[in-house]
Image (tube, one colour):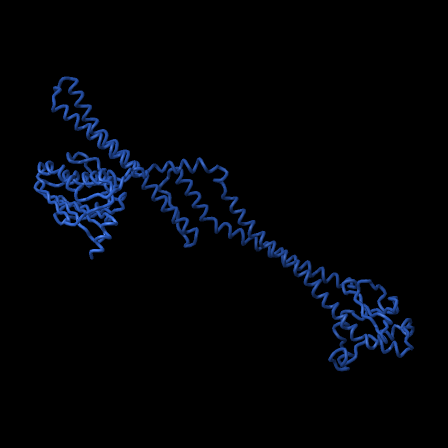
Length: 503
């Protein structure tokens, strides 16, 4: 039959590699990944809640309380001129305030239109904001030696102080205690209740974040777990395993890639089985013939004559060609097939190959037409491999062209390439078989008993040779009614440049 069937390396190698390189503990990472994602999301939520709580507490203590202390200092600034006036009006002495707290409170009382833009009625009804916070109760007056005269007794060294200057001399100090040092029990309870409310809201937020993280971990990792489980089945040899694709994101792309891998492994496994069946058949047939011939000679059924030896030699030659073809294919697959590219006259190689098959073509009743371009057909190639290529194609034509048919071999320039065609007459090949003709062991007919049938490796080797020469090969229906194998080789660079110069 025409062509050869593709066979891939056993996919069991991939399975063995997977099991030998992946530990059982690693294969059971499913709970660990879920837990890690859950803890990552939860930890983020906890960190955010703690940060917000600390920020709120800092803002309350440093912001709001600090604002109240600033108001108190501003209140002192407004009071300072009146205190200095009272000091001068009472003989430049603080004695008038030592036992008269009423006068002290009067000095501290806001004055409408001076301390705030309020009307007398509004001042009487509602004192300024600073007084609502108890700022007046925290004020104190110190003499020039920083001793308490009147006001809040617990004066601390770090408390803000405003100097009272008369004629260039400091006669006293106005100071106020920080708000946080005189907070009442109710204020403390209020602050604590606010703190408890904040942390309670934070705990509820963490709980909600935990629930959302648990759902997200399970929902996001469910398809990953499905791919992992499918991978285990695939590594165990279940090549029909597939993963359902439920999304278009990265996980969906992973599932699509896995399905493509499973298809490739399944196809390779089928090809491996086909290869084993094909090669065993191809080896068994000539070996069976040799065994029968030798037994006949041994039993004296068939005399030892030149004809019998030629029959044995033919079967040995068949075995030798099969082994050689398999060896060439293994080299090509491994990228180890040797080529020695030199400038070669492709027309000369074609003529030599055709000449060696003229007798066989004539014996098979096949007319030969050789059409060569008059221009030079020079390519960078290995002449021995080109001879092997053309020999395979001529052998294919001799085997499968009906008697009385025609084989047309043509080579011509097309642009910067040389096109070579081997076109024969009936029988033809149906279109569904054309794409697989170059697969190893592939045959158009399923029967293995046709006398002209070969091992099915010729076209597979031919494709490897053409590709090694940076060429292209294809098969299509021939105008003569049979099959046409077309090849395209790049023209030698120097020759192509010369042709372009002539143009």
